[in-house]
Amino acid sequence: MREDSVHEKIKPFLKWAGGKGQLLPAIVKRLPDGIADAKTVYFEPFVGGGAVYSYLNSECRFSKCHICDINRDLYTAYYAVKHRPAELIAILEEFAGEYLPLDAERRKECYLRHRDSFNAAKGTDGFCGGGKSLRGKKRSHSPSQSVYHAAELIFLNRTCFNGLYRVNSEGLFNVPHGRYKNPRIANRDLILAYGRLLSNTEIHCGDFTLLEEAIKEQGERAFVYLDPPYRPISRTASFNSYAADTFDDGSQKRLAEFFRRCSDAGARLMLSNSDPKNTDPGDSFFDDLYDGFVIERVRASRRINSDAGKRGEINEIIIRNY
Image 1 (tube, rainbow, N blue to C red):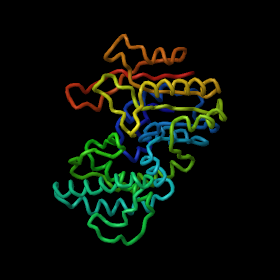
Image 2: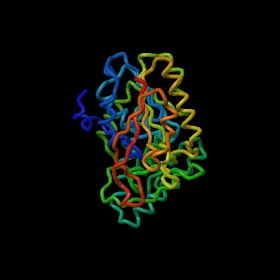
Image 3: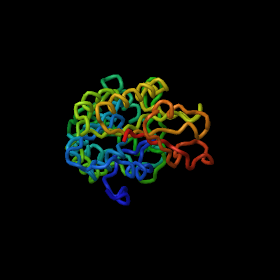
Image 4: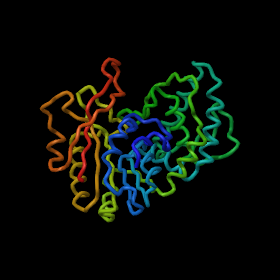
């Protein structure tokens, strides 16, 4: 596998805070031998925006992949891209056709209407039907509720501030409108290509432990990449609100136990996380938690910080059992 080909593969169809695009070279360099073997089954229990999945599956084309996330909105988007791409593209093209000609103030109004619509679906099993265009006119076709919801997520993702996905304590999406001049709302070629990439992939929604039995069944054939919500490196640096429930230290410990159980079953595992030693050299939280495994510190760019002066390179950790 060529490290210089990392950025030539299929890109994620969503922008995602904490995405591993910039960490890919370090991840690729540490992949286990033989990962491109046709027998390898790939698991990613915290798929997020799918930067690692997108690259590895397009490069290796695994025999089977299982991706999972606890975020129901994200699950809905992946499902629509795989099973209903044409319908999804049609809705996005309509969104783009009505949003892009608007001036800045009307764009913001349009964005907020869709944010409200998207959040209203939280009380209807994670989906929204809509059934109307941005101007309130009756649609000429009747997309399923799940596909419409997926289209709204992509629309918001492409037009919100910094392409973030963030929810409040009630699980409602609360990112403000962005100021992109010409956002790519309907990327037909990318969605169709990503749908093909997903053809060998099962999409799951739930806690990371949902995949445990399947990983154990595959044993040595399984390769698992774990990218959980990062442990905050300071009390003010937390950005793990991708779901209403936070991923606290108790969750990190539960994940470490999962890592050990899957390792004992023969699976090969890699995990990335923040390095608490960036701010407290005496904080050995992950060193203690993953004692006995390979723990490496790699340089990574800090991309989310309200203070531009504090954005730059920091250490992240990569943990392996091989």
